[in-house]
Length: 365
Image 1: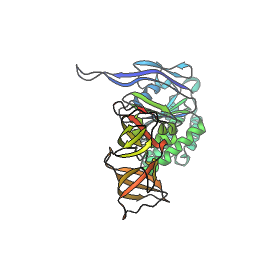
Image 2: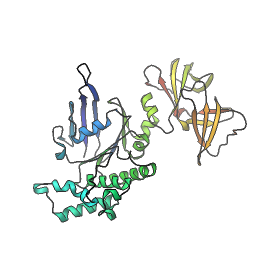
Image 3: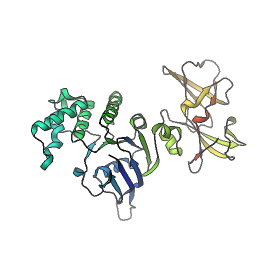
Image 4: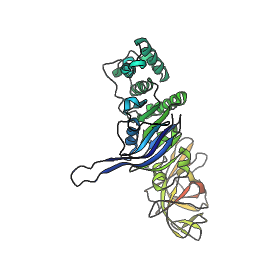
């Protein structure tokens, strides 16, 4: 089911007589392709959950339209939109079994959609098998782990075969291991069912790992839309570049003179096509090449061995952060007891320039 958002805007009244209204979502236009998983990504308060609630009908837009396929659903109540939604806190009924929790949405079906008890149990078993909890149908939620409870919530959302599946930060209550396992399950389920899915998260690693497309938001405004790797490699502005990436991008004060990029006194890269100016320089952690005669010198702080990679932690007066983190291959060796200066060349594709006043991307050849 294709979902189209046209100039979607949501404003909330401010508190107090003189308080200004709050624009939670501002002129959001986007088409979610049929059968794709789209991640809404951004910090708290950016409008991603409000967008989700407007899609499912729990919030009404101040302006704009929402279409499922060619059908305008903007004024249709949530129960008639054909959506399944999974919340952060699972929202399971503690006095009901897993089976009863899953079949609960089916009990409200009426008319031609009404199901017999046997049909409901069959649908519940089918949904439980999809999320691999069919052996737990007779347990109560208190007898389940957090990951199992989340699977019950997903099965309950899927049992009505929704046209659109909406997930509002569904993994934030899980520990790291369960979070990884459950997000892989969500991706598997989405690919098997081909249900159009919207996944809200503030965790960029989650969004990038399972989404076909990501939408990066800030203060109610869409910053960039694209495939996760494309957005990571080619961010449109400083906010997107800083928000995506673990470890975070390294930021420096820099300048362009005569077609060369300077960080401090080091001429680190040719940047043809950029006029002389002060710039902010972003270098992804994987953008460093360790070389004895490298163009960029840093003061060595420590070396962290991570198995297949080495993280070289260093410092530079032009850095905007206390330390610089460079990820290099473990085949390289850094002598912590020797020279306290490490030198790097920089990979041009991993170096990003931004205007100091606006944060807009400055592209170079």
